[in-house]
Amino acid sequence: MKTQHHYSQIIKKEELLYGLLILVFVYLFDYNCLFKSLFHIPCAGCGITRAFEALLRLDVMGSLHYNVLAFPIVLYFLVLFCVRIIDAVKGTQNAKRLEKPVMTPAVVLFLIILVSISWTMNIVRGL
Image (cartoon, rainbow, N blue to C red; front, top):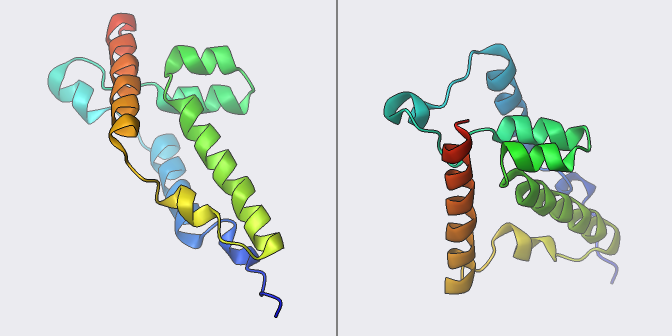
């Protein structure tokens, strides 16, 4: 029996809505980092919007300058998007593993190191 293709699952409605809400807040309101406002040092995520904008211009080095976290985040979502397309065409469900990754101690340590590097770089550069 052939499985039914679910093209509506390539981009979920909630993800699209969240993305649009983030764009509205970033571009319409004067957004300031709450962490930086309270503690007077940048957080690990400071500069990530500018990093995403640089990636949209295909400026990888500029993106890495603003925030090193943007590249792996965008890469994750691009891979997830491609896997969802393959799932929709083939009728498989491989994207579910990417949507809920297993957080092994090695993965958690890697993420802690990555966020620490980003935070240190933001503090040193004074973003």
